Image 1: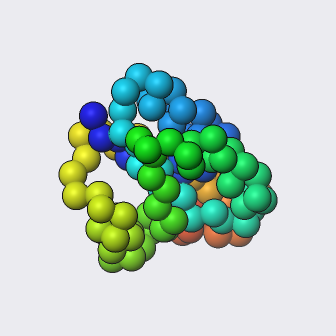
Image 2: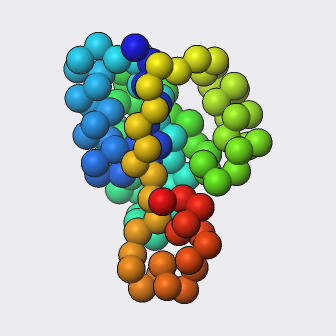
Length: 106
C-alpha cells in the first residue's frame, strides 16, 4: 500500500512513517520544513527513513497545489492508496496573527 503522510518530517509524522514502513507500506512524506520548528530537527527525525527504499521525501507546501503535484510527479509518485493529513501550522499566538495561513493548512 502506498501511503502519503503530510507533515511527515514532524515528530508524530516521522514516527508514523516508521510504523507504516514496518507494516509493509511504501511511504511518501510531504513537508515544507517551515522554520517555526527547527528544520534540522525535522531532518534528524527522517535520518533513518532516508536510507529505506520504501520511503520518499517530497519537500513541498500543501497550500500550493501546482507545486505540490509537480513535486510528487518529479518524485515518481503517480498513485496513492491512502493519505494521512498531519501537516499543521503550530503555535496558538501565531495563529491569531495569521489566521488564513492556519486555516489553509490545518
